Amino acid sequence: MSWFKEAKDNSFIKKVKEVLKRHSFTRSIADYYHIPIEEIDTHLQIEVSDLDGKFAEGNGKLIRIDRKLLDNNFFKENFHFVIHEFFHWLKRRSEDKFYFNDSEEVQSFVLQMTWGLIEGKGEKEVVSKIYPIIKAHFKDESKFEEIFKEMMTKAIGLYQVYREGEPLPLW
Image (spheres, rainbow, N blue to C red):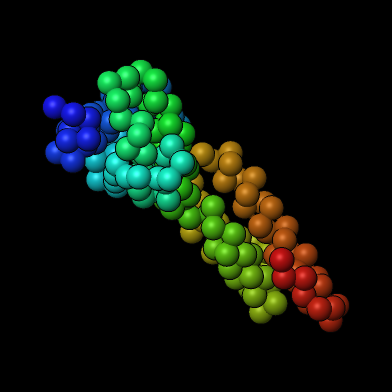
């Protein structure tokens, strides 16, 4: 059976996914980014395409592999192209799952905390309301503490600028 026919029959794509799911290297990278290995089956699409000179490409949901790479040595000689795109997929998947990779979300919480200060709530009250909401999104407590402190510092700075009547330096 030719590689092209196998690719069309889905056995090639299944084999690519099996390597990604079973290899200790790719499993450890997925684990590092807190992506369950099962998401390779549920959230990663793989296609074989004519890519006009590119070897592989991806968009965070889909990995396309150039048809010209599909020969009998693909898994030995060309799988590194899949690894490259797999890493992009993992990073985007991780960012999609991690709320605070979105700068707009971070800024919204900072403004929310600033509003509390403007409305006369003390720093402790603002922290008591917002702290548990933000903490719930973190697995690493040390990372959370650092990010929360930075967000609160920005909120206090914005509050001081607002009180002085200066234009707000919104990112």
